[in-house]
Amino acid sequence: MRIAWFRADAPDARNLLDDTAPLIDELRSAHDIDVIVEANAHDFVWRQTLRPWDICVYELDHTRPHAFIWAYLINYPGVVMLRSMAVAHLRVPLFASRCIVTTTTAAADLLRARYDNIHVRVVPLGVAAANDGTHRSGGAAKLLVVDDRDRGRDVVRRALERARDAGATFELLAADAPVHACDVLISPEWPPFRHVATTVLAGMAAGKAVVTMEMDATADWPAMDPQTWRPRGIGADQLPIVVTVDPLDEEHSLLLAVRRLSSDAALREQLGHAAHAWWKQHATPAHAAKVWNHILEEAVGLNPPPRPNDWPQQFSRDGTELAREILTEIGVPPTDILARS
Image (cartoon, rainbow, N blue to C red; front, side):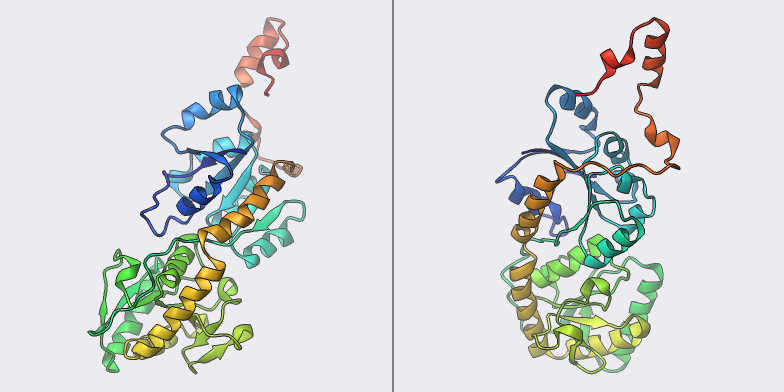
């Protein structure tokens, strides 16, 4: 299958947080994939006219680097990978696409409940291994915090200060430090945005102890409650792979997690080994590619859902309006010249 894959930037296999770079590499074993970024997007239309791709995939987020993608997904329906649920609130990509892809069952259920005539599929995130999952020994525990929330940064800062006041000893790494450099990865952002979920999985792939938020996206994971240090929820009969924080008790639970994990190397190692094993069974690029292959084959035969009556007029324009008007004036049927392949 020939696939046009739209992204905000070129895939970077060296960037552990670029989860679709290894995915595209995996899919290329079965498909011919051309990556379309803003710099080469102007060539897409004439190339599509001469030799159409079988399907287009659009990685879409609500950011400036992704803005160029909108014009193409509206006119060339394909598979939209939602990088943030904020995009879904705009509704347009949902009705302009053959299929919507999310990375959590909770997000998919929400979309299906709101729009019963769109095609939604769930695909697991797959990240590459950061290293062989080995652990450092000796010295203060190294903590890496990833949290883009304005309020969240204050909560984490207070929790770390309280942990130090309670006697915890640790080294806080710079926010841009590589995942493999830490002993404990703390990523409590909630709700989960895609790059944060990727960060959490990168930490698990690297065999690190991970602290994140208890939420829909992590509800299926075997997790440990820092208030009791016992397994929580439906995965209580499995080895915990993460420590999850109750959002109603975020600061206090983070304090407890930091205080225990900064001093308990054995627990860090136990969590890291279990996390690495879980990643190997569930969240590698090969796992993601297997699901994507089914979705791509299915999407080729799907049509976008009927557009609602209040569909924004600007999204019905394809740039040929003036040409059609001129052709009509001179008596030439526009469909003879402007018909799409």
